[in-house]
Length: 487
Image 1: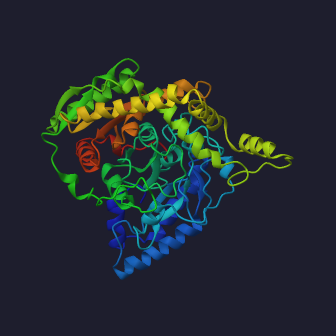
Image 2: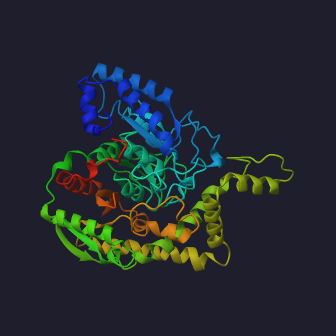
Image 3: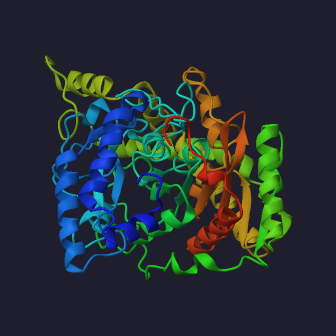
C-alpha cells in the first residue's frame, strides 16, 4: 500500500480494497520497524491515528467523505497539535503539550476538514534552524538513500519519512529552503507556497516574515492534493491573504507548450557541482521537448540573498524566541537563586548551539548603533531581490534552476563550519525573501544520490508550477525510484 499515490489510495478506500484502519496500521507498522534507523519521528501518535482512521471509515461508509479522508499524513513537529507534544525538536519545548491545533492541523485532520489521519510528529532541526537536520535535540535524521548522509533540513524528518514510505506525504515549513532542499536530497517533490497562502497560526515562529508552511510528497499531484486542503484565509493569522483557494488539482493535465522558462545565469556560475549541472540541463532539454520555451534571465542581486537572509532571519528569531525565558514558556532550570540566573541557565540549557548562535547574531544586528548598518540595509537589499523577480516575470512564466549545489553530504561533515552549512540554501533563500512560491522535484541521480530541480513562480502561481512539474514527471521516471531497503 505504501507504494500507491494519494489518488490511488483515495480510490482504494472508496472501492473498499482496504479500510483507513488497515492503511493506517500498515504505515504504523513500517514506522515501528524502519524508523529506528532513520529517526524521522519524534512522536508517533498511534492511538490518535487509529481513532481518526475509524472515524474516517465511518464517513467513507456513509458516503460523505472527501478525497483525502482516511489517508495518513505526518506532521512536522513545529505545528501545534492539541493534546500531543509539540517540541520543535528542542529541549526547550520537550514537555510542551499544545492546548490547541494549528490551523493547518484542523484543515487536514478535523472531521469537517480533509479528514486525514495523523501518524505522528516528525523530527526537524531545532526551531527549524539548520540545513541538515543535525541540530535536533533528539538526534540527527538519516537519509534513507544513504544512512551516513544527511536528509537536508530543517524538514529532514518529514522528507525521510516520506522517502522511506513511512507516510504518503508530510507537512513541512520553509524559511530559507527547508522544504525544497531536503526534498531535493531525498528524491521528493516539495513546495513552498506564496507567503500568506497557508495560515501560520499555530506554527511555532522562527522568522515571521519568511516562514511558510508547505508539503512534501512523492509527486506534484500528491503535493497538489494536500496543499489545496491546507490553503485558505485565516482570521487568526494577520499575514494570511484573503483570496479564494485555487483549484490546484484539476489543471494538472494541461499542456505546457509555450510555457516561458527562464534560466537565471547567476544560478549556473561557480559553486555548482558538475553532476548537478548536467542533470538540471538535461531536465531543461526535457521541458523543451514538452514544448516549453527557454531563455536566459538575470537575478543580479541573488548572490546577496545569503548574507541578507542571515541578518533578517536571526533578527526575527531573536525577537520570537525571547519568550522562552524559563518564566512564561519552555524549559525552566532547577536550583537557581536569582532571576538573572533563571534566564541565563534556562535559555542556556534549553537552546542548542545553532539556536544560540542565531539569537546572538540577531540581537547584535538589532542593537543600538548596528540596526541601521545591518538590519535596515538588509531590508533594502531584500527589496532589490524582489525587484529582480518582478522584472524577470515580465518576460517568463517560471524560473528554473538547481535546488542545491550538490548531492547529500555526509553526517557531521559541515557541523563545524556554519558558513559552509548556510551556503546549502544559496539557491532557495531568494524565494523566501521575495515571498514567491517555489518547489523542488527530482531530475536524476549523481553517484546514486538524488538531484533536485527548482521551479519558482510568480505570486499565487502554484497551479502553474505544479502543472509544469506534473508534466515533467509524466515524461520521466526519476520520482518513482525508491531507496534500497524501503521499497
